[in-house]
Image 1 (tube, rainbow, N blue to C red):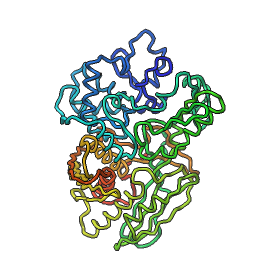
Image 2: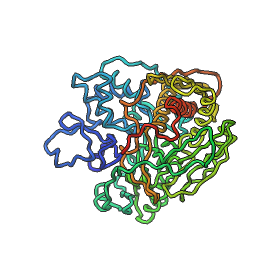
Image 3: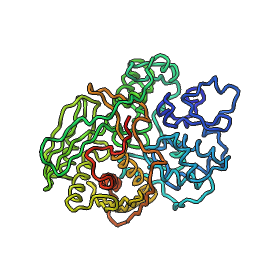
Image 4: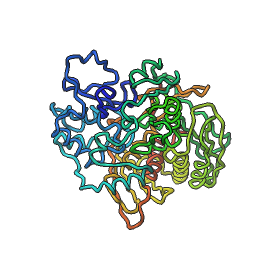
Length: 504
């Protein structure tokens, strides 16, 4: 679909695992994941992509997604649109039908709720309507929250955000990177055939917590494990000989996971060697193996707030000085120790890495001392950039979020980022993690093994935005940390995250 017909709305997020939904098309009007569907199986049948959808139907869904802030980077959105628009011809048009359809998809940005709202609205049901939006102000707010450039509007919803894998010059060679090596071909199909990659799998191995807190009488301890950022667009860049590589960030920041990606350097080297434009791509398995993880930590606190935080730092990781500085701000009484462990690289740029864990530990220490552990406890956090958030998780699971982030600029964008922050924080505390062997090799290589919460697992989230005349500041990181702390309190402060991961 992409190489031969130029249908760039059909995104390659995990191919060929068939687990992210980004490549969903219609076959005879019914959704199907394209990456695991051989062309011979659809011979003589009708195949429809977003480009070929009825104009009125496509516009209705695109406008609903734009108005609800249901698309951020936009990489996953075309496949989701194909899935939900197929419901238009059925009697299943309510929120439950939308959530069921979304089980075939992965979205990392939006927290699902705005997608459900947009789907219900487009299908003719009732959902909150959003006000008219200024694309410049929406992009400004996204950059404050990201922080990275991000466009909004219909083009972003349709997946036209300038992704490197979509914008390479016609005829560019494709260099596909995987543990099996690098294969260069005239297109992705030929590169994949030449690579001989081994399909990624879910190992079934248990999660490990690589660091233990120091021995002693502690008021509170916390251990975390390896967490995959799980951005949907695999690392990609293209370059012409002697040129500047295309940014792998495209229409978003990948939660900090691509800030140090070497894929641009690899594209430039291949282009110079071949004397021709080259599009460099990492397989999904390569992203999991080489991409930086959220650093595992072990925290031990005394009742006065003093204690120790141990941070895992495998060989090949970035300098963790920014993370140490962030932790020191949140918990100045902690002694910070970096511990060399075998494992995939970690990076300090991942969303509130270390700072959120330290903040949650300090909140939990105070709550335990006051005897207020459990659901319904308000948690208020001041973010490093000056944004402030208050989060309450009720006994029935409903979540109330209040955020103060200076001049709002675009409420829909800010709300979308806050919903995404709630989703990621709940996942961090409840379910996310990947198995890493004692030798440091990542064992879980499929997107469904990351533990990311599905749409049907997300509780209702109510967001209230409080405007002010201050300059715009990041608010979603404060929401992230406050949600993590509130979720941990509601769980009763078990000593390890994730708290709800099912045994394997």
